[in-house]
Amino acid sequence: MSAAMDTLGIKQMSKQRATIVLCGIALALGAMCMMGKIGIVFALLIALMLTGIPVSIALGLTVLMFMYLLTQVPIEAVALKLFTGIEKFEIMAIPFFILAGNFLTHGGVAKRMINFATSMVGHWHGGLALAGIISCAMFALVCGSSVATVVAIGSIILPAMVKQGYPKQFGAGVIITAGSLGILMLPSIPKVIYAISTNTSIGALFVAGLFPGMLLTAMLCATTWYLAKKNGYPRMKKATWGERWKAFRESIWGLLLVVIIIGGIYSGVFTATEAAAMSAVYAFFISVFVYKDMKISNTPKVLVNSAALSAMLLYIITNAVLFSFLMAHENIPQLMADWILGKELGQAGFLFFTNVLLLLAGNVMEPSSIILVMAPILHPAAIRLGIDSVHFGILIDANMEVGLCHPPVGLNLYVASGISKMSITELTVAVMPWLITMLVFLVIVTYWPGLSLWLPRAMGMM
Image (tube, one colour):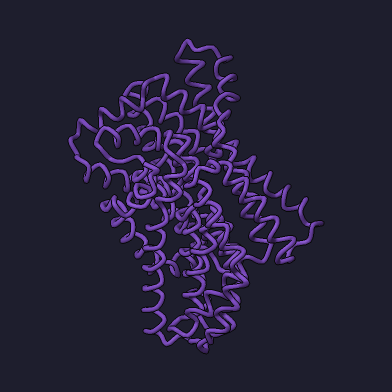
């Protein structure tokens, strides 16, 4: 009887708390609506997202509801924007980079990169973990996807680390954070999306991520080495120079893709979009005809998987383009820029505000949606404050990296959970040392623009 009454009491308390939360949300949304059209737009978007509707659909419904009820814009114009909004040559880079990443994942490129990295640093403290980080960095140079990097490297290196005696939590923490390098180094799908949203040079963004990516790789390696030495994790036998040369020769075909991307864009032989297409063709060639780890009969499956992922991303982009159309029609980016500048935050304060806003958004949205919604709003204010567009893009990219590594929507956590069979809670705890390192890196990238801008300027891309 007592237990039943306790249960009833708990249910009543839960209902009371739920009522309080819902009332609080309703008041907050009502207050936002009082702010005028800007408040109404974001109140609609947040209200739809709170119902559990996917962000992409919430963006589209917000536009339709606002346009139909509060403006005189004909619905036909919205339908036309659905098609004209994604008629951009640069968008073609997205499906090509996805296809290239899938070919590289299935074609044995990751395995050979791991062998080369292991031959170089395997004898250090935490050698296999260090090799995993360096392998992620090398794979990131040619892939452009964080999830693909975690799958390709993590599915090989994590079982090997457990077999050698590393705690599973340690290995998972390494792979989750190192996998985020996939969107920072040379090619990157979030960079393409940012470039499309803000009319920034894709080639300059690709190259600008190289030095920050190398710095983050070094910082993650330093954290891993310290933890491995402190806890006495195993080391491997030092490889001979002959073994290192052999491992390098086997991995060179994959690493040559870096030369194709940078060399082609820098020399003007092809654009960043054409570089993506070349990457897909080259990745197919080495996977099927050089390494021969992928059979031609598996090609249709890879094409279908790539098409499905591309369709999902393009659907998100289409709805986000509609949302951008709404904001431009209502002059919201300029109004927001005026409001931000009116606060007199200065460059340092604005960049701090941007980081906090993006980190908070990373708790409820995935990277593509965040960039498509936030970049058109924040970019005008950044430009008016004298912040370089390329530097701002790398800053946003670094924030997206952090978002990929923490709950509740950190994609890397879910991918690593599938590989390691660990719960999200366990992985959240496991990733903390490297996540702190990434936050330190975020501060460096934010307030040291030369780190991002020196190389594209030296190459004449800016």
